[in-house]
Amino acid sequence: MSCDSTEPRRDPRAGILARLGPAPCHPHRDRTGTLPRCRRCGLHERLCLCAELQPLALATRVVIVRTAREAPQPTNTGRLVPLVLADASLLARDPAQPLAREELAAPGRRTLLLFPEPGAPELAPEAALEHPVTLVVPDGTWRAARRMATREPALAELERVSLPAGPPSRYRLRSHPDRACLATFESVARALGILEGPAVRARLEHLFALFVDRTLYSRGRLRAALVTGGVPPRAAYSARADTRAEPSSS
Image 1 (tube, rainbow, N blue to C red):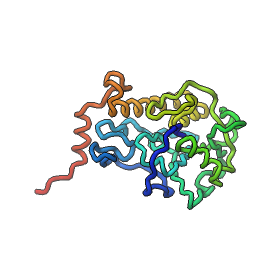
Image 2: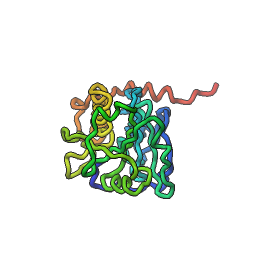
Image 3: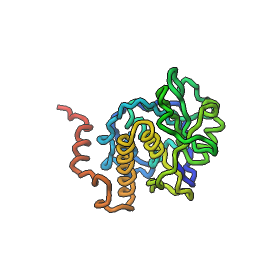
Image 4: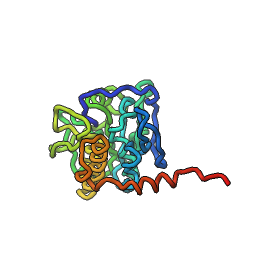
């Protein structure tokens, strides 16, 4: 979940249930009407991350349940999860239409809600010994995620787990007074590190660092020399733009 102390603005177009499947990288104008953004990863087109997002095939299934207010936020990290995991989906919560349990749970799988409430046991590798795990992760501000976890019937009845204590969040795009709070993508990375192994966590945390650093660079808050993986050259952006250009008529 995104631990942001500032509530984002509501987007009236968001709020329908949807699964985000593979989609091409298309440009669109951001809120200011200036720089085009990739519709998949949300970054400015020149800094598009899609070439790095090769889906991992894992035993664990991840379901992100996102609040409507989170959908238009360019700093949202939940949108990246279905792009990096082959068996992952993103559902947009609509309070007027409760989630169906079938969207979260599946026969032969153990369904767990990753939510750090008091008393929730820590996630451990043993959780997946008897059955593969479906990990459900709320995606929204801290307050919104808490409300969703308690008010959404399909989530309220799920078995809950928390993450063990770890290093502070590296999510420098939003602020929260509790340094133990993690971004949604960070939470998924650490959970899969427990269930799938440290190599998976390392891969996901590298992608997270790319997303955060490129966003900070686009805002003028990070020098190019400090961006993880470097800043994509303009030639690469031009090549991507050329492949999307409409063929000229003869």
